Length: 365
Ligand SMILES: *Cc1c(COP(=O)(O)O)cnc(C)c1O
Image 1: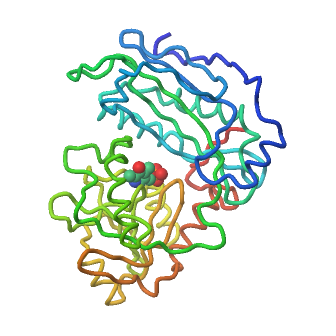
Image 2 (image 1 turned 90 degrees about the vertical axis):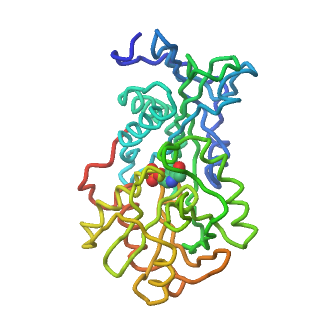
Image 3 (image 1 turned 180 degrees about the horizontal axis):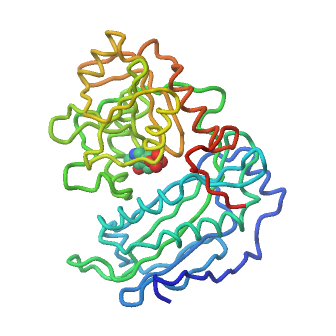
């Protein structure tokens, strides 16, 4: 079957799916990314043949040759989005075509094949519909969806990208990041390490970016901070991102966010907040913002709030900032009103308690 045709999935239902009681036990305290649903999606790609063997089958391990390309050269990419149970009982995802488009932009950078957007969204729909009992009913909880693609050719030749790939989707019930109130995070300014440089893979959602980031995250924790803040590779001055989240700076009623220079990951939450800002009567600006400006505007009281945003934790306030030779607090270090308003609006659309005026919600069942 070619990519032009809509793939039809071979469905193999699990004969060892967990019982309702076992599932409820997991859903009572799901954590994040620890337990997976009963099924998974798999689609193979072979050069010359295109995408084929689309299946939904029981969740379980893969068997791969130890020489498989992904283990050695990290030709891999992923996506992350959630399925929400709305107050009406419907199960929805949020802007899945935006994830499909970003998946293909990442694929272009990693010399991997594109997957038709329809196939990407169909695969999510099929998995969520099949495992819909795993979508939590608790407020603020969701089913986290993890589509990814790996290079599967066996062999150690380094000169060419793999000729075969596997696309998969797995799903995991997720608790709200914040249990017992929203708590601002402390951040460490990383001047020793760099996440991404011009011409590199910063805009692609690939595992390699994360592999290179763990050492800086560990350093942040050693310095008593929750998260690392990445700065530009050249001057170590301009703010890029916080861990796996984008950043927003609140200057009274203006939202400033670092411009997408090619080294930042273009978050769908970031993009959505830029659009929502207008609805909330906030101005927006995408530009460079230095750590000197962050510190001086905080101290002058012009910068009133800072928050990070991403699918997993939605909107997270930033309270204190620390670097090798400086540290300061944003306003009084507590979650600010703009941060909380943006968070409520976004989650309200996702959970169906606010009108979806941008048509972002994609109904599955
Ligand atoms: C995924 C990701 C984000 C957030 O993207 P969303 O689409 O909003 O979830 C931000 N930064 C990095 C490095 C990421 O990997």
